Structures are given as structure tokens and as C-alpha cells.
Length: 134
Image (cartoon, rainbow, N blue to C red; front, side, top):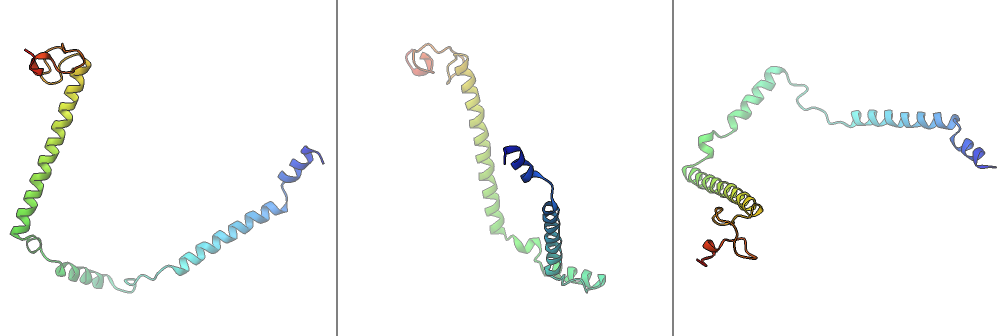
């Protein structure tokens, strides 16, 4: 048997190809039927709309109000935490902004501290004025 005959025998469409497809389709359909049969029953399916509304209202009535949830001590602690978070975010933005300015100054040959004078000290990114040499 040469290579062409071998490839033809492997890739020839035959009864087995359609039977495999049919078997896969049957397995798929059985899976769908089993999934729908094994799905949990809806416990609220038998309730009327009025009963569902009453149940929802009862659940809402059981929840504590907002004033009961947050005491004055908790509110003070929340305010302190919020202020600390805001301060941290503000500081982080300032640091990122300053690093951007330093990067721009160094890229242009300007002192990274004062951002006005040129870098005149060899091997340093600080000018002689900021370095205290003058």
C-alpha cells in the first residue's frame, strides 16, 4: 500500500463517520435531558404573586435599619479610616507626580532637586547649589 492509498483509507468518508456524529449528538441530547431532570425544583414555584410579595416584605422588615447598623463609634472609626485612605491616595498621587517631574528634569539635563539649574556636578543628578558645594 502506498502513501496515497493509506491517506485515502484514513480520510475516506464512511459509515463510521456519520455513526460517530450521531453517537455524539445522542450523548449531547442525553446530557441535556439529564441536566434538566436533575435541576433543583424552584421552592417558590407554587407560591402565588401575593404570597411572594408578602414574603419579600417580611424579609425587608427583618433587616435592621441603617441607623441601627452604624453606631456613633463605628461612624467615627469609618470617618478616620476614610480620612487615612484619602490622605494615602493624595500622597501616592503626589509621589507619582514628583517622580514624573524628576524624570523629565534628568532627561533634559536639569537638577532633579531644584529643577532649575543644569546638572554641573559630574556623576550626579544634583546641581552644585543643591549639593551644597557653593
